[in-house]
Image 1: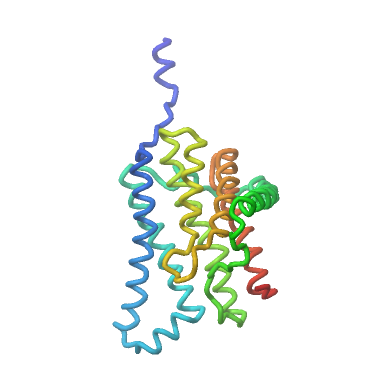
Image 2: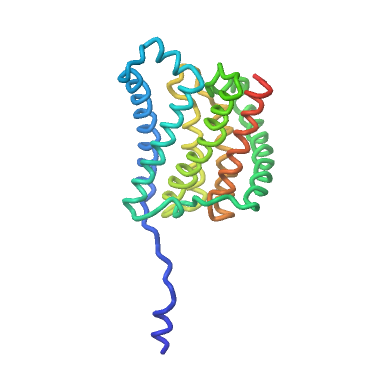
Length: 258
């Protein structure tokens, strides 16, 4: 009888995943290859259908071209992550993707306050240690010519909706999940946040490295991971990330605070 009862108890499936080193390599590969492939596609496909080089350059500088470029990047990231998860017989839900709940939205608002205070503290300390650190350097977000309402809608989706969703799935979902399979949570948190910060240094832009953005995103990532751990999913983290980017969108494109 006892054996029969034990047989009826459902056993929770343990999701297989990559080890930390493999996860880091795969994350970097997804991040870089999505940008490279998207760049090749957006530079070659318009020319293949008859667009002139001059028209292509003008289109890429406009809101539509930049929107399509970001859409390609984020779409490729999701496609590659789906393939990697499929190899392990996993899904996006296994790395925390879930619909935000009302509670998640409340935690996101509280999390924003914590992030803002934490950032101020870290920024002051960083300035004391590195007096030459330039906090006035602006992050290049593109869409400089966007003025019309329909263009601002594209900007909104390009900055407030797509990147927070995909970045959370890649960083706090895929990367962090793989790291904490064998590492302590604090180690996984630091590595994830450091990689997220490095990705925002704007390598290859021709401008000086954007250390202020690295400090900002490192701090944000600490709070995002806390929310990920507290709630067990990415809902609150995605909501906080969207809230932060949404405020930046309002300042840069609605109120034009530059």
